[in-house]
Length: 189
Image 1: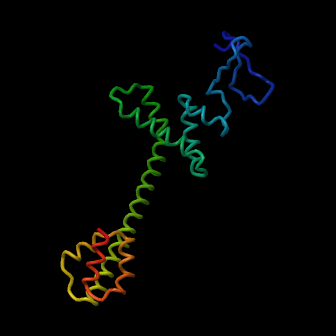
Image 2 (image 1 turned 135 degrees about the horizontal axis):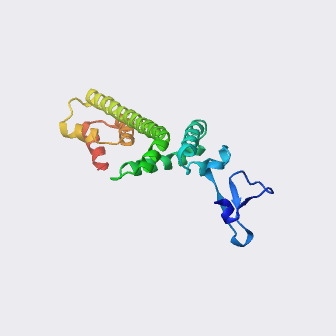
Image 3 (image 1 turned 120 degrees about the vertical axis):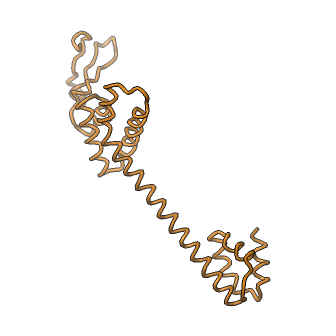
């Protein structure tokens, strides 16, 4: 096929094996993805190949992404590509092969998404724990200073944000009665 187009490799310049230039008046080139050298610089093209070339490129990508975040976007694109093909109704044999070739990228990306979700959950849990702890300590301090607190006042205190709770912890030292606490809560509504 390359001969039919009159395509030839260009020995000058930095062109790699697998790139064939068409005659001058056509001003173009043909890239034979399966003939590209297996180097990091050709990875973007090789993941678009087929069969063994693509499978090898995806496996290489997964390994490289463990060492550098530089490849994370491509990994995410390939994982999404696989997922989009997978949800189609009529998947062809060629698409099944593509799904299999893209699976390592998908599995790696899915694990990263899971870890991100887990970290977000942990952070949310920590924040909720801090907020609950501050509420309990504040209510305990107020009960100790002013006696019993009505459920309405307690509910208003427990609905405060962390910043508001911290402000109230400091402000409560200046209060003489529970009415001062209630007046402060009124300013927060």
